[in-house]
Image (cartoon, rainbow, N blue to C red; front, side, top):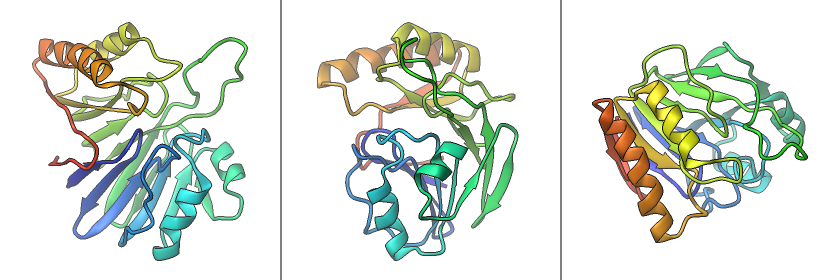
Length: 211
């Protein structure tokens, strides 16, 4: 299974000629040129993860692609067929196995209402928590680790990594960082990952890796 990192929080997975897209948001470059997309997973309703124009552009060339997201995502994308997912749900689509974890976005501030959020495990290989520190109930081979957000403190990210102990990690949710910010936060992720015997890989936008 090949993973390609797109801008900010968007990931593309390809297996046997079919593609799965996670969180195509408004910080992500246009995605309309993609084909053979069988599914779109959206972890929550915020525009940097769930941008209606991006979803529509993907569906234009992939009209049979299935969309999975929270109840709030389903309401936001009411013009499309969305399968609402909850903690513990499991789906198989186009050869990809999807398992969903958690139910709430990490708190930004007590004055900001919490929204629904789902983490997703793909093929029991890659785990992406969305905007949360939700931990799956098993060992993680590859962790897509958020490294920059209004809700994020790097010390909390380090605790999250120390608890999960992924065999491999890479940074995502990072469009708001400068070059110096990438170096600083990636260094912390690398430190904790390697302390538990894992390996950190820094993927820039457009980079791909075999999982």
